[in-house]
Image 1 (tube, rainbow, N blue to C red):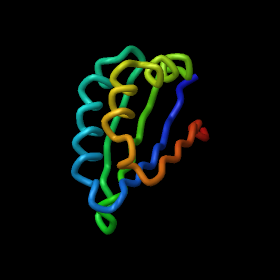
Image 2 (cartoon, one colour):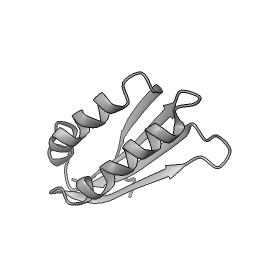
Image 3 (cartoon, rainbow, N blue to C red):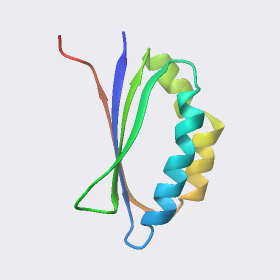
Image 4 (spheres, rainbow, N blue to C red):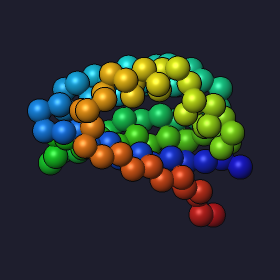
Length: 95
């Protein structure tokens, strides 16, 4: 069963450029991962501190592999103290 992830990331004021840059680094690496079907980064038109990833994965297990990948750990280190909030929703398409 496929899995959709909606992740909201809010940068601290003044840290938007850093957070955006680090999020952008994740895109090509993640898109090449097994099971990644879609990995879109969006920015809020009215709130420059708010970013969202919309992701589709072949399975929860493959998404979990992504969550434990070294590039995600590197992102966490690079943005330590720059992110105000992070919320993640695991979603399933309603047929």
